[in-house]
Image: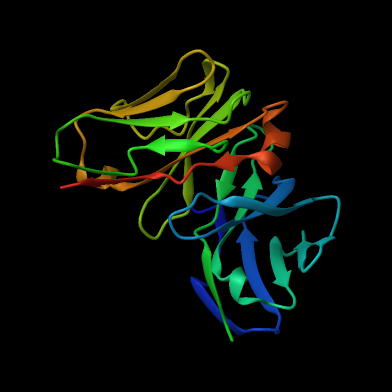
Length: 112
Length: 118
């Protein structure tokens, strides 16, 4: 049972435009969410996080939005750059075990 | 190289053989995690070490999987009698581990070991 879902396996965006990556979760007890970015042949790297007490967190070109009632979060990248092309994983922390639960990832391609 | 290193980078083995995967965390990092990513799947938690002890082994898929960590540093993940469904990329991550929850913001991942079981 996939508790964290990224329903779009891939996304293609033109350079300079906004990229929006979506993530849905089923466990209303999740209280902390993270986004990781992964290039081929490399391990994931932490990108940005958000606590459930907030609905938005911004860091430069990256903004994460959380809609608790919809159990939905999204990562916005604006403006998108070719170097942003990677696989993006959404993850949530299980409150009882502090275990990190990942989605299946969305492959973002930013073209010139 | 101050990052997390893993060896081998690729491993091809025959069904039924045992394999050992190695992780060298960043020096001074007390927390160490193993994950795997199967084709088309997200990262799946396997085991978490704090120092040499493993307070959470709940992600190990079967008793064929085991892991140890010695000297609070290097960790090995052993898969006995490998099966084709064990084929995946096995990722190791380390962090300062001041608290497990906080450490996720500061996890450093290795490049992974791609295991293929024929």
